[in-house]
Image (cartoon, rainbow, N blue to C red; front, side):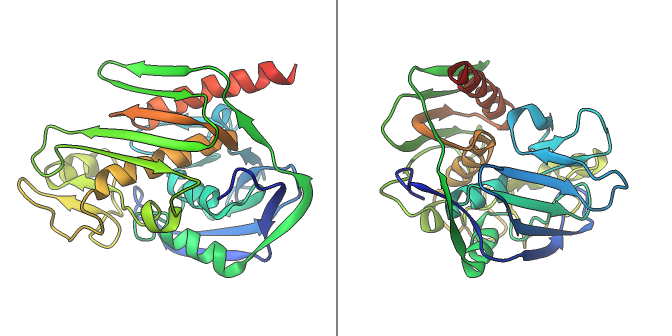
Length: 285
C-alpha cells in the first residue's frame, strides 16, 4: 500500500467469500465487486427487500460492542457487523473503490484475521482507474480518550501506527509494536494476526449472543496460563490490535499521519475517526 500512488484502484473481477460469522455463528457470504472511481467502499445487504447502500464511513457506525458494525439510521434491520478485518484487507491491498454485498447481518470471519480476504483480492487482481487517489493529510494533532485508554493521530509524512497493549492477564501482559506502512509488508506483518478471546468469557459472551461462531479455527483462545492454539507471531495480540486500528481508520479512506494508541478499542477508534472526518469536512468548505 503506497500513499504516494497516484491513481485510484478497484478489483478486476468479482470475488465470493463464504464462511461462518463470528458472533451469530450463521453461514455468511459476501461478494466483492468492482466499483466506479470516487465511489469509495460501499456495503449492502442482499437479503433485505429494500436495497440500501451503506457507505463505509464514521457516520454509518451503529454499534461498537466487540466489533465495528455499520448500518442505516433509517432502516434498523440494515446492519452489517464485524467489518474491521475485511476493511483492513481492502486498505492493505490498495483498493480505493469497492462494492461489498453481504448475504446477512454479519460477514464471514474466515480465520479471524485479514489475510484470507487480502489473498483473495490479490488473486482476483487490481485495476487502475483514471481518477487521482485521495489521501487526507493530518495537519494538527487529533485526540480521543476514555479513562486509561487513548488514541491520537499526529502530522506525519506517511502512515504509521504505534500501539501499546496492556492487559492484566499473564498470557498477554504488556507489549508494543509499530507498523510503518512505507517500510513494512502489511501481508507479512499485520494481515495474519488473528482476533483473540478468553476461555473464561466464552459462556458469558454466548449468553449475550456474541462469539457463537468462534472456534480455534478463527480465534486465539486464551486460558489462565497459556493459549489453547499456537500463536502465529510471538506478539500476535498487539499486531491484531493494529489490524483493528487500520480497519477502523479506513472508514475515512486513506489518511496520512502517525497514530499512537494505548489500550484502545473500536469505540475509541471510531471516536477518533469521527473527529478526523470533521476536519476533512472543514477543509472541503
